[in-house]
Image (cartoon, rainbow, N blue to C red; front, side):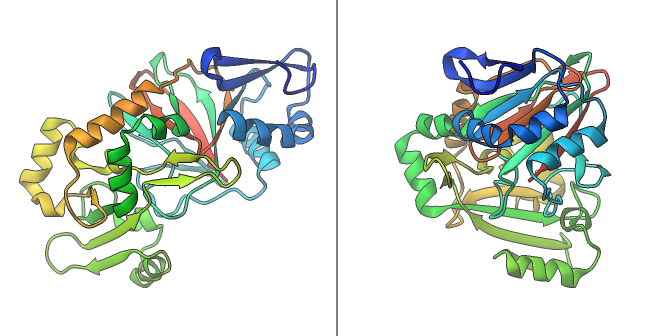
Length: 319
């Protein structure tokens, strides 16, 4: 198995599935020069395998990670129209989703709940949790194949309706999501991105609705991939106590986020469970090492997060 020059060793986290190619130097290399020289091979491997893990390249600071990411993709993206809380670490580098340590973040492709998404996503392991905290990945091509054809057809015919209600003090504020406190800026963003919006006098301050794709075709490989967050935004993704508490407090129509078929009809929980199981069947998990950089084709590969104990810090860039 040879994908790069003899300066590095390549092996798969899960060889039988060619899942996540791990690249590790065999001699001292300048990581920035090596990445620059091998950029085209990195891009080809991402399309073929969906993800690469650069290990033991001697990258330990966020600024060095930023340089690596920009060497591969000079135009990194800002995180606008957010669905999760993050902290900006400088430039266009962010923390991974800031979510309670005892909770799991389900599988998802970044920004698949919208009509605009990054092609690549970079993860950098700054501090490794004492226990857990892995970032599992799943092959979106194989997830698509595992989902029952009748379910795929219904989703692909109707699309997915994402409903978000912005109630002060509950989940993310609209100011955080749209990265502005100007309503006219929000209005323009929604108009430009085919998002229906309504400012309310009673209840949620803002309600948005958008119908998006269930699957897409990869622009280079031509393969069909499952590409949405219906299972993650749906109320059934919450633990039972949290779910009932939110419904009791806000009413089902005012939940912070929920999903429906594109025609507005409810999505059956058993359908969503089937989709979640498809992701679980494709799950590839590995232990982070300090300084690891994982690069994913965001269309071909979904990611998640395991619960953890101790301090954990993962930086993220999108391109």
